[in-house]
Amino acid sequence: ELQGPLGEALARYLELLLETNRSFNLTAIDELDVAWHRHVLDSLSLLPSLAAEPGLQRMVDVGSGGGLPGLPLALALPDRSFTLLEATGKKATFLTDVAREQVEAATELAREQAAAETRAQELAQEEERIANERKTLEEERADLEREREMPRGEDRLYQHAEFVADSSSDDPEVQALRSTLASMFDIQSTHSQ
Image (cartoon, rainbow, N blue to C red; front, side):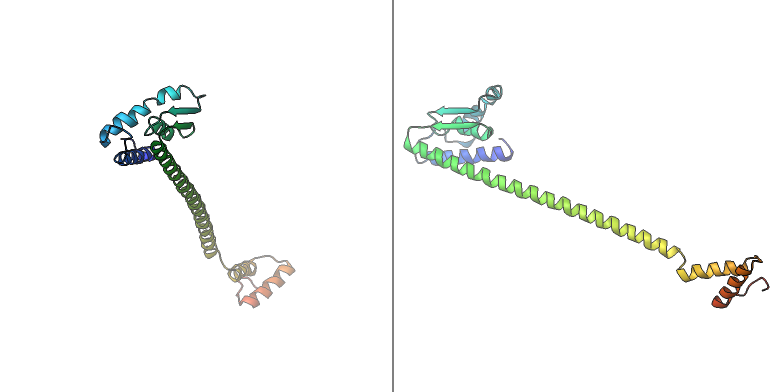
């Protein structure tokens, strides 16, 4: 049994084929396992030949009956165009109904895929926003740590005042500054004034 969206589409097709076959004759096969092998896999056995002909884009299944091999091939090769030609009204109605359901299912799948892609993009943007916020917070934390380690403005000024007050320069301007700073910060100079 095939997996994924193609497997699901083919399983649904077989379900409809066997269900409708109870009302009127579409196929002599009425067992699901046998239908997979004799209808689906036999139809898909044409895929290698069709793949060898990439220019062959439009095909007609004349006397399609229950849609074999046209419907399985159309489901497996959605980029190619298949026309199913059937003269019997009930069979043609069945083919139209199956084709309509498959188109609706493919449209819904495309919508779901688009929604999933949009959500994935939104999640990626959110992840990027969170990473940027985390980086900003880490930078701010580092800045705060640096500020905490640095002396405050008053402390730095006091340290500079102590340095000037303790300097040994005999320059009158330095002595005047030393005296002013010593009185502002109540610093006792180790040098006589």
